[in-house]
Length: 397
Ligand SMILES: *Cc1c(COP(=O)(O)O)cnc(C)c1O
Image 1 (tube, rainbow, N blue to C red):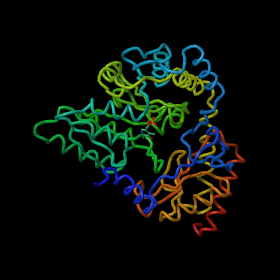
Image 2 (cartoon, rainbow, N blue to C red):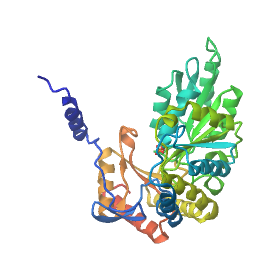
Image 3 (cartoon, protein in one colour):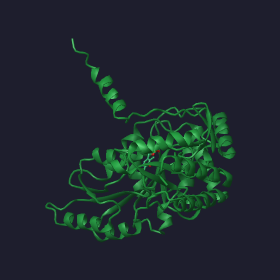
Image 4 (cartoon, rainbow, N blue to C red):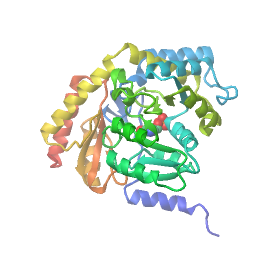
């Protein structure tokens, strides 16, 4: 008889053959500037822990304390018996940090997108998405019964074209939702949210921004893309983000009007039907807000390192694309070159993974570096030297 699971091994072996399987690198200790990976001490150059907060003493202490006072689990989903004072305090503090009426915390950013997007637009509605939006947005859109349209990456005139066409649709769309990443994670470019919000308003559409890579990075005090552009909440109705990146912990969140938050928690199935954060997670996120508010040096150092790294890499002759953020892609062409460069960098003590097709175009394989505020200037010097040495060896510069 045929084995009904034979496809598992077959598909996996195909991935291996195509060099597309994930071979996991294992950290033997914290995600720190210098970490131990597969037995080797290397400089971490590709984590999303932009500000180095995942090891911040105040946050670790807050997590320890919350375990003592509240335990290691919340016991339930938020709407039943899993809302603790820590969760409520976190949402109040986050709303204040974001200068929004209210905020809501989900288990992850993925859960926020997958839970909320299908509730904001359904049958008879239209969702318009940037072609390079994150996979969790794509899945959120797929869960919706709304019609979908895509505009060319960060192209506001193309968005305008799609909106104008939508206006002529019969029957008239009930609602239109425009969704974009704030910072695009493969190229490090920033969505033109100011202009997007203007054309969306002209067509009566809502705007939803996923600022996973902009928080803790852009805007005054790392408040994110909405603050970066100084936009009102009447222009960007849903600001979504995650505590799993610059904040150094885990947890998705949205900020906006009180009506948005009340609607969202009554309707998002991911929020209603999945357990809430353990107390140490909520406490660590709360402490992260304290840290961002009281220690501006982390965001400042992130940008100082970023500007220097980009300048010196460009001066060396590397193609670093169009990034405007601490995500700096080092574009090398074919996949095999990116793999080789990554392996050589690892030998030289720098950990940065290749990003290859199908995540980026076939001839745009790259090493994606992400700057980290916890590095010292000497660490950045060492990383640049490693790129220079490996780049020369592989005839990239
Ligand atoms: C990482 C990321 C997410 C998912 O966030 P998690 O909290 O890790 O689930 C969503 N959107 C974008 C743009 C991201 O980069």
